[in-house]
Image (cartoon, rainbow, N blue to C red; front, side, top):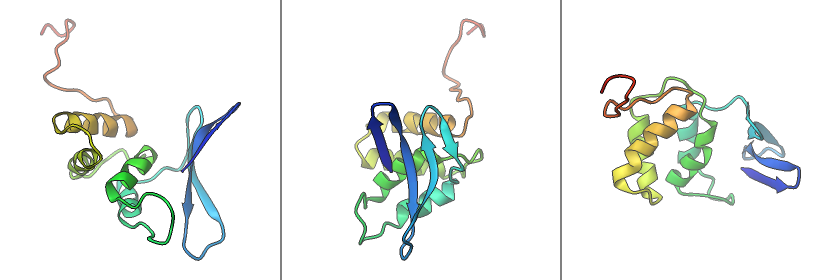
Length: 127
């Protein structure tokens, strides 16, 4: 990940490196909006779970998953995704009592789905 914060050039670039290659592949970027192909949940897990011990950067799998999470573009998530994200959030210090709500919100936002909690009330629905 490369964070750009120069005057007139703000954003984040996500680059993929491969051992043995002399070049990097840009897989996505955030400027004013997301551009790029994004990744599936399984690709995110594969990246998070396989750090290169010789490379610089985050080695902890929970941290790595949260760093690449904005690249998620898969609309249909496996049932284990939310529980995995909750566990990773708590590993990095999120409060246990709010980690599940945060995980649901993040997954809904990233997969472009609306999130509804049945305990929410609305004056428009009569409850």
